[in-house]
View (cartoon, rainbow, N blue to C red):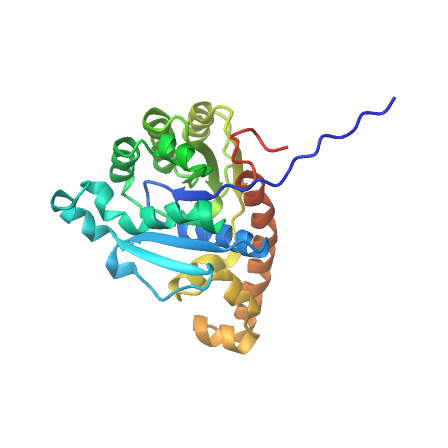
Amino acid sequence: MTTKKKTVHFQPADLVEVVADGTSVGKSTVANRVCHLYREARRPVTLVRIETGRRQTAETGAANREVYIKTEDFATAAGRTGGLSGVLTELWEEILEIPGSKGAVVVDWAGGSSLHRLDVLASTAFDATLSALGVRGLSMVLTTSSTESMRQAGTYLSGIETVAPGLQRALVLSGRAGNFDFPPLSEQAESLARLRDKAGEIPTVTIPRVAGRALETCADAGLDVANAMMMDGDALARRLGIDLFRARACASELALWWSLTGKTLARIAERADGHRAP
């Protein structure tokens, strides 16, 4: 007697938030990569960046459309209808379009904005509102291997579970600051154990580190990874301000990261039901 293998249908989230309380954890890079996953699946995607105005750059080309919301606008929340949620009017407009357009929205939240975000989740009944719209949402909480970053991620996960229990969550271990292979009984190992305990059964994946600072070099140049890989060696060297040999080395490292990260993120972006991916 043979048993048929269960088929897991492709049901990607309609809305993916990439969040972390700290900075320099790789949020924007991950958000861009998620956008490319939707484009590879031929699904229109809008990237909403919530960022300080001084860090706003030209569009990366990662998404079909890009929307910027300045964090400085949170200072004017008291004078807006809806308070803090009033600052995010452009985001709400994009989400309300999802049921009709069948597109997707990826949100890149600024570091240090966790309190604002949790307040907005609570005041808008975010999980219930998405459910009423028929929109599948997923929050990817990122952490690096630093003890403080892991502590912040644990707090963030608990906060989301408290104010929006119906919103699916995933934990992303970003190799931006090094890997997570800690010596037993070390402070970092204990921090990771506590974080995994808080994460419980939600999907947890690891984003590999790129050798040679290739990701950071591209980010400093305002260059999306996909665009970097499509450039010829001379053009990439000029854009990054390095020699041809180092540019080719960066391109090789980026290509490897692109392949591994795409498979990793797809496992959780495709499973918006909150169950652990196989």
